[in-house]
Length: 321
Image 1 (cartoon, rainbow, N blue to C red):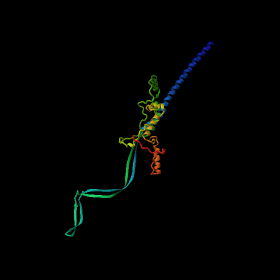
Image 2 (cartoon, one colour):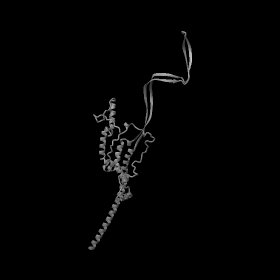
Image 3 (tube, rainbow, N blue to C red):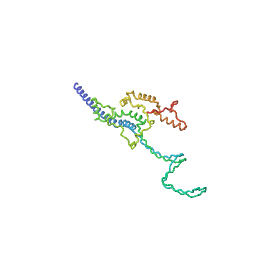
């Protein structure tokens, strides 16, 4: 009886060892499969999707509109130019003059023909007093080139906010291992206490490769000064950003000042102190222009004196930078 139980116990023990071995093999195979699947998802789905969105917003911020607007028109010009001046005519060739002259001698009139020639170089003073009518059609042919960097317009804030939303994720995915070889190196660094900062982009991190067409080529008016009243004023408002925990790692200077909301409240207070209405930076200028055009169409002599939705307040003057 003891022999039976002894043999049965050894059988169970061996079966458990074999079963455990098989389970471990299956787990290893499953983990390897999951590892391959995770790397495949990271390399072929997550990284291209998140990185593509991030790169597109970076490219949008770096884009420049370069377009030539042809102007072809005819302008009627109808006016009268008064001309009252003294001038001198210099003869460039001899001018023969023939006339009948009457000569009075001793009370008698004698009619006789007179012929003379005005010599070359003779200066003749002439007084002009007349109205010169002008009725012409002027042909206008202009090619107006506009080179507008979007990063220098309000579109920068929109693109930059979207960039901040995806940049931590895109950088982290780019820094994560993409295969088992990189995973081994990464684990070694973590164990050694020298793990890389996943939110710090590498030197070769280039989210946007460039554009399919040039902008600003052969344009030589970059250094031309524009009137001071036409220059935009920096408001100090910053984009809200993305996930606060990750955004703080990307923009520590903003969060040292209390975060985007605190920075923007301070900026709005400063704009009010400088007398700059909020419609010039809160996105309402489009509605203001549309309302101005509507009023102009309804009553051409009526001027828009206040921004839409701000009844009772007059339009403020634009402050200089």
